[in-house]
Length: 190
Image (cartoon, rainbow, N blue to C red; front, side):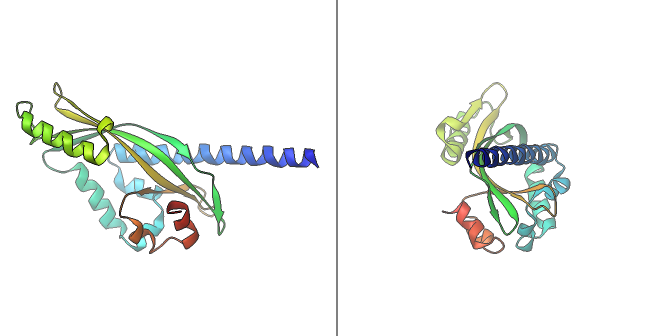
């Protein structure tokens, strides 16, 4: 009996390890597409249920507008998954909630190197949003460095064969309730 349990445990650990490796690969592919501005291609890695609430074209336009905002330059730097919850299987799909961080450099045309009041105001705003220790300002380059710490939900559907993602934001629950099952919502909002 012990040997059978040990074998089951070993197989479970190996499967979970492969799931996490696959998730990381798909997550990195997704983020690389966003980083290079290939937003339409990145949408293949998004949980398709969101498009029932927010049409894909509209989501692409919103994301592209971030990159094309006049007077703002964003450079996405490193990102890393930092913590995984245990995977849960719900209706034949595997869900995995995880924490990650994304470092980005942001330059605002309205914030000049000479305008210390504007620098201080923007630094304060970003620190309120992301945390005091997550934001800095480089006077030499005129860039704000922001380390955004967030949560995401991965979903693996064996019929698709890849992971799909939802980045989770405050105030988003009402949208998620429109297309996620109650058991999946409980993973996000215990």
